Image 1: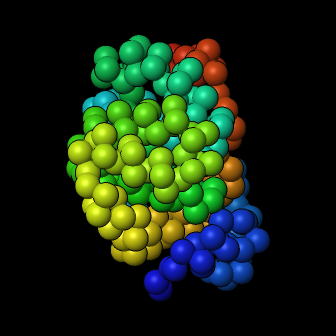
Image 2: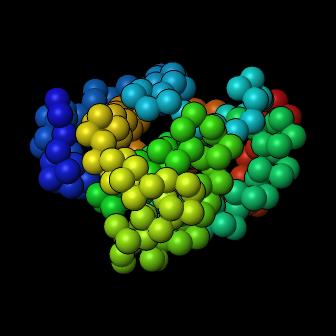
Image 3: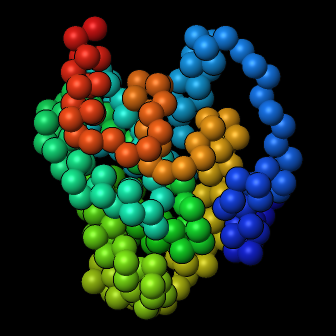
Length: 219
């Protein structure tokens, strides 16, 4: 199914998403079985390729679902992620995956630009989203103008930025990934983290992450 910008905007609310894709409640299952199922489902990307840092075979995998428009996601990127990267990702102990869960159409377009600028280069992607999060206020207030400026600084022409913003195929994939996360993984807000398959909803301090990772590394 092709998702237009208008349909995508409608789908961004939980009620709108449920109506559009006809979601039915999942049957109740035991906690252990449910956790195992979630861990299996979250392990692999759906439509868009994962953007990740750190070795795939690291002892701990952290998957973050984030929206480029949400202040708590920006705060995590600025205040927590650098320490997480320095202590655990760059030392090979954590495999970190960033997945988009846009809460509005502006966040979707910003995510699309990040992928256009980075291509298949995960390291470049993380550098781009760091820049985008730092300019979040301007991006949300004047999205089109800010994206054009950021795209230009990244080496994209004005036409390339416009083409990226109107890439229907990428928008469809972004929508499909968001739908899957909402329907199957029960992601309803950002940031949401899956740490070795265990869900943690809401912002996490570095101290909380540090304690959790340390306990998993000891197992």
